[in-house]
Image (tube, helix red, strand yellow):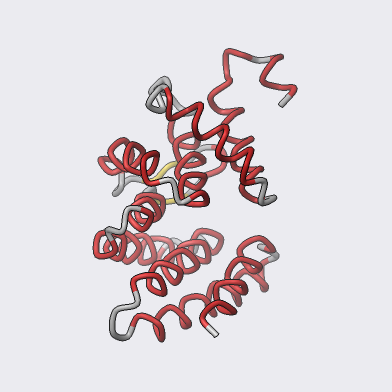
Length: 187
């Protein structure tokens, strides 16, 4: 937060990183506050190298808060880039479709989310991006559990267990914890 005062010219990326830190530490009030501030200006950020990781951070925050208004705005901004990869900051080496799928889930567009996750999983598996494979499996599994169509719960368990296993093997404690929590909710 002190960095915001010291470096206003890069406030967007700092705020994006800050909102993500609040997500990871379950500081929901701070997540909502920062998300509301960014949404008030329609997530208007310079279209430069900090745009993708900053929008990704806000997408994760919108999902964390189940903020459909922000998710809709972010979906419209990010969907045109859903088949691209980003190679900067917090989203280094990840397909943007992971985050479009996350936003589609918040919006209840489960079939769209399923398509984005399917493509992102194939892409991250093919390139051996274990962190983003585990993250995709976690979010995909949570989406399937939420959608709860025939066969979804079994597939959700499979994806969440795989996310949990990969995360545990690679030291991705946050993903492991979230996958474990999602599995516990499934019973």
